[in-house]
Length: 104
Length: 104
DNA sequence: TAAGGGTGCTACTGTTTTTGTAGCACAAGC
DNA sequence: GCTTGTGCTACAAAAACAGTAGCACCCTTA
Image (cartoon, rainbow over all chains, first blue to last red; front, side):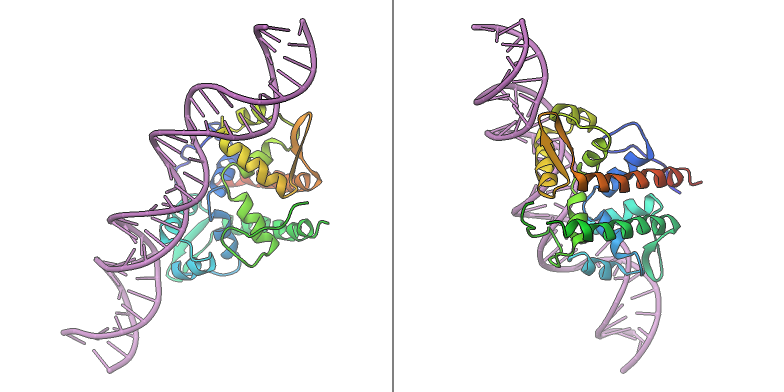
């Protein structure tokens, strides 16, 4: 586990702030989403994320790995146990989004 | 309710993609979080969000209002019924983040 | 043994987004 | 009139991101 470094914005250091800050960066939520049921290589992940630039993808992957949400092995990138738990919350969000989308 | 316009990135138009895209912009999650239990004026909200620039705050507020997540009246900005539901999911996220933060 | 294919990833330039500061227009209260 | 508070805009600088190319590495197959 890496150090818990300063949070962009808030200095309270509250976990939720660190999390909202990390997830609020572009592609972070999307990356976590795309890896929710399978591990993917860098290039596969890139394609899933609308051909996000490798610059951004690499930056986000580094950050998410530092937060113990993702890891990387010979089969590619995937969720850690923490990432899996977070992925479940995203699933709930997805379910909710359907109702939200169907609003009149 | 406003039109469901194109999503930055993905063109599938799936609700979760529209949502992840909106919430992935800077300060979006934080704004929803800060309004979870009370309505705030523009300036109050700005202070809560670490003095975010008014330019960004205004842009994010417009987007979140277009998504029916926030509204605005004489008492300031606050959650719509949809925003409240999303706020509950953020509360769950906050609870989870405490366990995540306490990882060894 | 070299040629190809796949991996993660970096370099570079240009565009987009965000920031930071100042201040405007409007309304209510005095 | 003047102040106070509201939401919000203008503008220039800084940071983040995009898009393209391509590198270094490790395999496999010829």
